[in-house]
Image (cartoon, rainbow, N blue to C red; front, side, top):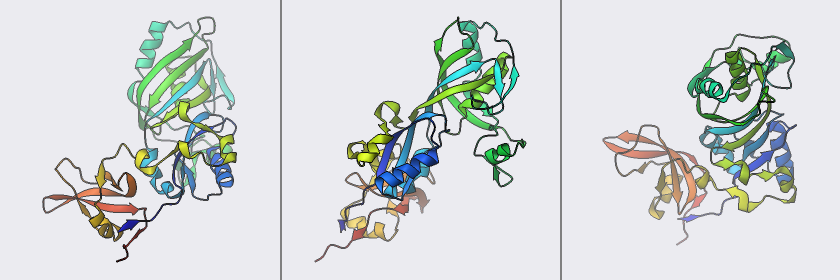
Length: 308
């Protein structure tokens, strides 16, 4: 068996500018790269900036396995004003005096938001209720009941605090996918009793993709910077790997399960199936007759029989 060369594919760590939706970024990348198969890993609000990884080519089939990872943000928290969108773009619905809060009191307050917490998705989010996105209801001036959802905050701390301007705090947050930073800001304001909303927001990390290594959109006008393209094999580094021998390539191309060594597997566990660190497929572990196997779910490389 031999491996046919793959088309250009992988993950690109883009720096999203404020003023563009995530959809706008994808549409522009498609035009610049002349590639229809492009998707993003995790939406960023139009006013937000920062890390927005995109998948290129067949890598779009892996978005669900790469996208659901922890994120990191730097955000401005504005105390004293509550808005209907929970950020600076919304309409102010309540104004209250900002209390003097010492750093010790801040630490006690932020401690309440560490670990697993519950959030009610904001009305401007893309969560579906009754077959419609919440932001669609919000555009019509309709507020609907939403259920709280669990999220996890692994780290939250103050980056900048000026006693002369107690109404503005800069926070660093590390959290699980699905966490709404605007809602976090809103809830902190409610806890302090003065109300709050999010000012600006920068995503500094999404999984393995960091702000320091991100690529500006303007760079794409000159073509895809290959040195910044992360291979599918690397992007799935959080998954265990199974190397496929040359004598098993034919079986893999037919979607046949491959045997796994050892017993440290779990039912449904995702696994990278590769040949010399080139991703051939992703599969899931299952047990049969006391033996662990890996069933291919998505096969990427074209495999052809070696001519005799």
